[in-house]
Image 1 (cartoon, rainbow, N blue to C red):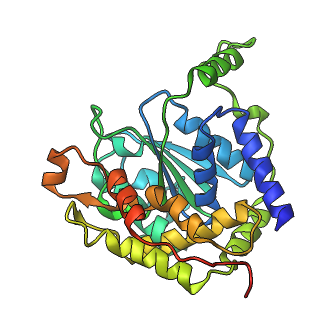
Image 2 (cartoon, helix red, strand yellow; image 1 turned 180 degrees about the vertical axis):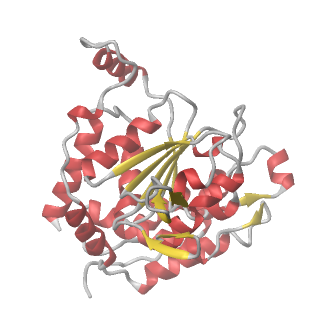
Length: 322
């Protein structure tokens, strides 16, 4: 456990070489990957969202491909298609960029819903169907997506079904003054570039080691009381007047998966209620649909989740004993 936690700390340190500050954001992103889920990073342009996911992919190792989502992007540009090879006189399968370990979906909400839907099967079933034939994706396979707030011009809101397939949604915020000075100094240090290069990021793990870490996280002990706590928290989102549609069972599962990953990051082989509480907002908020009245009042899904956390009593006396 300690060696694994040390390795993961090295991964965080490598990412911090190019993504300065926002340590909680980096930690949550790493939790998502350890839990074997997909990550959605939201923020206004220019905050280094793409830089973060590229650095994550490089530090963990494995093959990565990037797709720039645009309004004219077609589903086949993501998944691939069946095409005629004139030289051979037969149809062949052209696999798209989705066949990779880490798919970087840049500005995913700049493409219309039908193109975004091309990722549904890949994100849920870890396979792609082409001309009626299923093709398995590499292991591990993860989508690291960035999006601008959908109020921005030229963006489309993600379908609810797709948002639910992201294990966690994190927000990239503006850096502090000191962090921004560090960024500017580092970027302009003998360079004419607009951001730090990921060339200095070392690959700490390979795909086999990363898969072993994911399996280790999945084997961590979770007390039934912690599971009960997570389920009660997800269920509370369905009984809140401010919410039109709450989180389903996938939300409860996501809470436990992320809680186990957080425990592993902390070097523990058991989960605590605090692990569930720490990831609740970033795991559940994007799965909720507020009522029209709540939106008019200016409420946010994060505000609703924070209220639920305060109301749901956490179990006490959870220890590392069997």
